[in-house]
Length: 114
Length: 116
Image 1 (tube, rainbow over the protein chains, first blue to last red):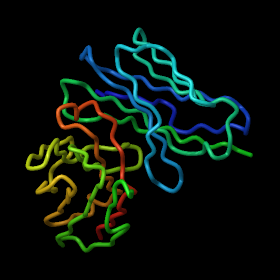
Image 2: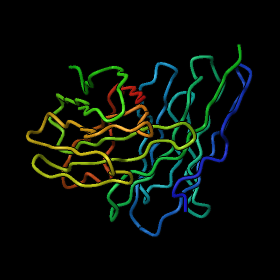
Image 3: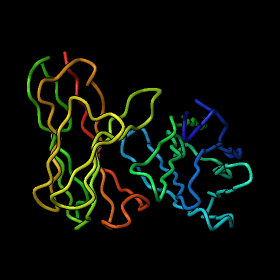
Image 4: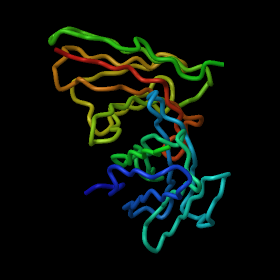
């Protein structure tokens, strides 16, 4: 079974629109961490955020916000007023305290059209 | 500070040849990892090392080997490359050894490998 599911393979939005990238995870651990990474066209992987399973507070960083809901096992990522520079592939990832690896989703490719 | 460097940037390799992908970090991180990225599959862990001198297998270790002689270097070797190993390979590191399972991982720029 897929530990991290990113159901949206590709999304296109027009600049200045808001967009939400979905991430659903599966774990039996009570202690786990969730991550978002950005992979721009240049190919590098850029860390965006890390949240632990005990902290369900939503987080906002500039135009980025994250909604963590344990009840639905989701950790969604919203970009407000999208810009062309937001065009990238975004990966959600899970690590478990009792596991031995990161589990990455298959990524969502976001294209922001000017 | 360079962070994580990987070499080569890209490589075309004949099947059956031996190849070592190099990874060096200057952050004094204890844990290091190798992933491969394939279209539609995301990133999959090949091998990891939570501290110098120890290594472990990830999700897709077959056909690959690693060593961790010191903190900074974590080379990945393909003993006899096959076309299915065509992929983009990322090296990553994270700070702590004991908390390696849940620490933030920082990634190198990647190596694009094509096996013909």
